[in-house]
Length: 292
Image (cartoon, rainbow, N blue to C red; front, side, top):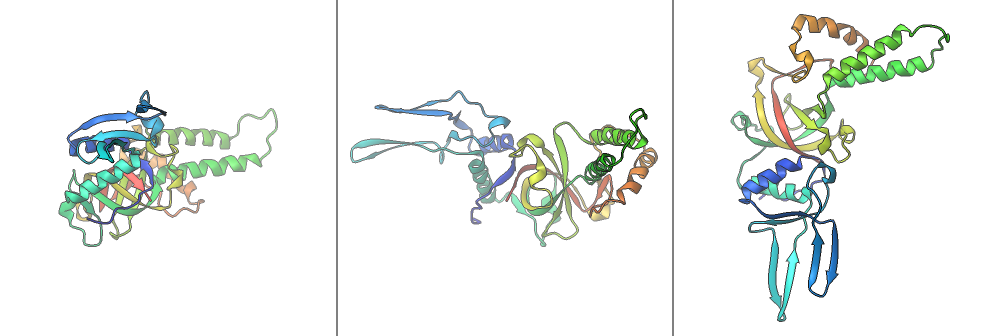
């Protein structure tokens, strides 16, 4: 087996991890969150009133898994010794990754890429440089720039709101339409596969601080499941507006809406193009973990 990575998850969908481990291990014998512990003459008692959920993503878990994980009883010097293993969601993710490698179902993307291993349903892992949805990045950058400029522009007290303020208000409304509740698209360049990108829709609640700010422009490992693969020769693309009201606007009308913002974006020094599409070769992935 490949040497185990000591992963530091920045993003971890613990619900998927628990579900997949339950399938692999044929179920949990027990699932508890340990909040407090009290020792007495008979042993250790645990208060298990905790809850598994997004609010305690990095809580310690007392898991009894079938076979390898669980409670062990043994005798040493005629004394009964009881041991309980304590796990965190990160350690369970590491166990899940080991299991995928053992079963040879985890495809590590490199320059010897086999397209047949990128079909929907395949587990993949790759190293990527992560960026935000370029449209949202541009819009938020322009809003911040205009708000800063207005701070240094004096207005007569009785003057009506100026056109700059109205423009900022419209831009904020437009940016709000680009965002789905609690989710965000990340765009990743796959380091070991030249010219290939991945679109990674993430749920903000599964970040360690509920924000992707710590990973933007950084290089991280991504492990997830493919839901769509678009090869270069297909001329297909992933629409970054999918799931938003703007996805239903005809192409010509959308071009008129974004043309003004596109001209304004030329004033910003950003590497990515102002675009609503990511053309092939591209993967659309449901992320399980993003880690260093």
